[in-house]
Length: 420
Image (cartoon, rainbow, N blue to C red; front, side):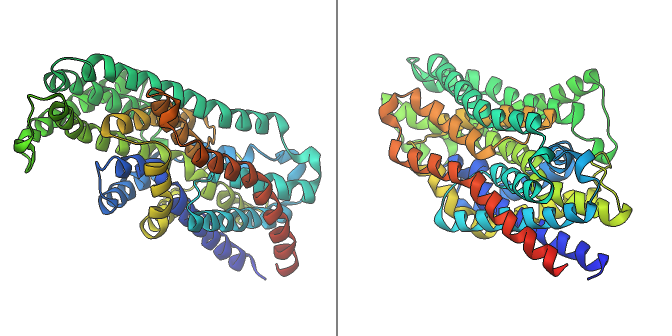
């Protein structure tokens, strides 16, 4: 079959993989918001759709390069570019298929585990074990451990700070109005600073650190003003006027309503960060096929065309809109009881971890990162606040993802080599 057919097939499989990412990983961005009732499922899908797409299109290029050329040694694989084409097609098909199966079962598995395992699997049967860049792979695997641990610690510290500055104060409502703008500013400046400093090269916008700091601060100030206005409206919401704020429970109810605003902001940050990192799992292999189809050689350093990021963003949005609600329920309601204060803590910690990893080019597991954040918040309440049986099943699904992805990729690799 001709090169045009192979290219069209690659785009279709890249879209399929992006669809499966949206179907499974939407829970990472919005599951906690739905679980805490800060957002309805429809609202979560709408917000995540916009922010996931923007993150994928604007900031997704850096991690894409790692997935495309950082797992297999280009010096070995360059000798047979046609095998790379078959293998990358197989990796997309294998990872996408496993993710769709997991999504149907409601398992929040790692899309990163799936694609990395698939690429390593076909690479070994196509070129031998020496083609795998084990040093790079070790760094990626280490990030799977470090990212949930780091996110868990950050979430624990953020929620502990909220407890000490607000929840344990005699007048938590007044303290929320005082401290909430600072928490809003922190969310906005972290995301915007990292994005503006190194994240917009795909649209030829390359700012210095000083310029990024200036614009991030301006965006943070606007967000504080908007947040202050929204928080001021809480007392006028239907139903809020009936809350007895003279009682501790009544005050906490108002505080949680106010933190619902912050959680929506942090959820937007996680959705943007998730799109920036996980689009690479679909577009990395696709970019390799497109590059080989156009040039005939393997070149991991070639620029990632913007239209590929567009394909990834569209696929993610379609997937989360059609199947994302299944996995959303697992992270949002089954690991631990979530409130807006706890959900905000987990999401803000995840946003910091994911965006920093994106800028370092590390394809971390967004699933593991968010679960780590939810666990960190749960531990702040004590181990009994966690459903260990659910965590055990999630951990088991993580363990089988890499070998399943690798085995499926081997099967599809032989299939595509025979057909194409």
